[in-house]
Image 1 (cartoon, each protein chain N blue to C red):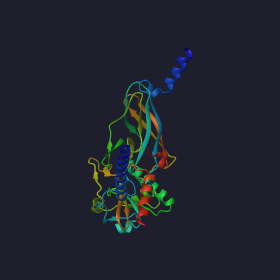
Image 2 (image 1 turned 90 degrees about the vertical axis):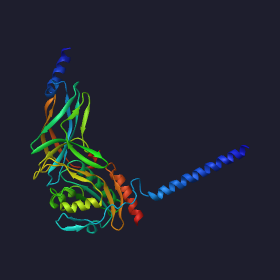
Image 3 (image 1 turned 60 degrees about the horizontal axis):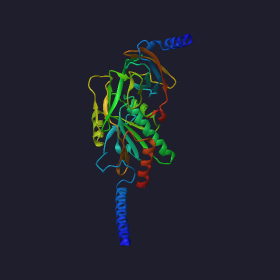
Length: 202
Length: 148
């Protein structure tokens, strides 16, 4: 009798373990590179913006390798430099490990952010960070493609502020959107997850 | 006793600008990050402690720029919204941090005069009770160590 009970318990335990393992493996295939992957919705896509040298460029000119894409504005003294420095730091970490990664800053404040201003701003964080701006229409199209939000605050013509999304997107040149990062992701986390996506892609 | 009184008086003298108001303000590490050459704005950060027994409020900052304001940043669903605040509370016996991602001093109208490492920015903090407190922001390099 005792043997039967033990046997049954073992069987249930084994079944439970099997189910658990199956669940884990299911999750593992869905989220191979950390906890930020989301269901593949259409994030990213064609855009036309203005480069740091004043030339019109498209998404295929800009995203020629795995790239971290961030939307912000240079008048913002706090959040945007913080996030840009973080992304640059992640890029440096990846480069140290031999990964070829790009970083892009897209201005959502084209009235004040001229190509020169954006160029100076990005140069401060990483020598290869690409700064993009454009006409109000061009920036709007790019922002919509990435489903980001921005809204100029009322009340001041010169020193106005702009509310904006703070996600950073990992974009692949061939397959597009891979994942996104929130503000509280560290440079180390971004580097690790990005490296995982780049390893998986090759 | 006399010695104690002397020490106490000296202490009062040293902290004179704030002591009379029963709010004893100390400002630590006032710093601003370097900016790009064409930057239009820069942020100032510091820690403020109040060793007094009266709650105080930082009402404003004066410095030699077209506009200087106290701001904070709120995050909702990943959207950052920067806002002008009328005051930053510094509770009695407490401390407030003006640091990246939260309260900060916003220096506006830098055009042509960026913050460079090693430069200093004299400023006056205006408190509701402690009155005016002169401080000097040090311009520092933006490294990840400063980010919280």
